[in-house]
Length: 313
Image 1 (tube, rainbow, N blue to C red):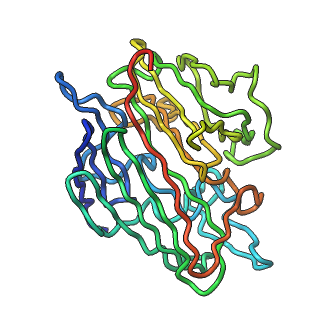
Image 2: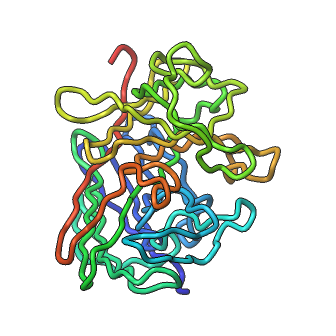
């Protein structure tokens, strides 16, 4: 596996770097008179993304229980890539090297041929375009079934958000979602039907401080604004921070905090927060919830993005 290549883009007061490894967003910041204001966690340019950071999760996000599923009456056994939880995790795209299609000052587009894998007889072509402008970062993702059989499909993006240099425990989180899918604490797999979050510890519909809060929560019933985008925010104590938005194609948001006490802390930062827009929940290949089926030559497209927000905005 070759050393990753990180390529810069800049525009509209934002600057980003995108890695060939996993098609990952390596860095995003807003330019300012006192230097850049960090909007995502980052890592060394010549290293592979830690903890799936910034990568594309496809052709499924989350875990597939025991790597096993049936589709169209056919049994599939994927490689168990997460032995601790007994699951196949996050698909194939996050650990592969993507191919550059185009690169200019403000936009970069990369592609990946998923190909055939153990337990996966489907051929998909993925593209990921990262573009910065006055509205921040926009990520446009496509998946095309280039094989001869219809294919199950799901996708997610995995950025770790950051409100400048504020420690996570001093920040507040707001999530525009009305339900959560409970997970088994030992395997991180769904073990019940969706529950409303109103009035529970999982309710972040109004901003709440993250001090001492651990999250591993797939949120559903995301609340979209009139433009079809759902918006979620991480705010520093001064009211400045970062907003993630996701288009209507992403009906789920998985909120995850790292746990330094278990060795899963983010490099150099310890506690960190990933907000993962997803088309379907974990184990969708078995649950059938919001599973996409791509017919031969059919294409799927979705968008998500990140922007800076200021006090009172």
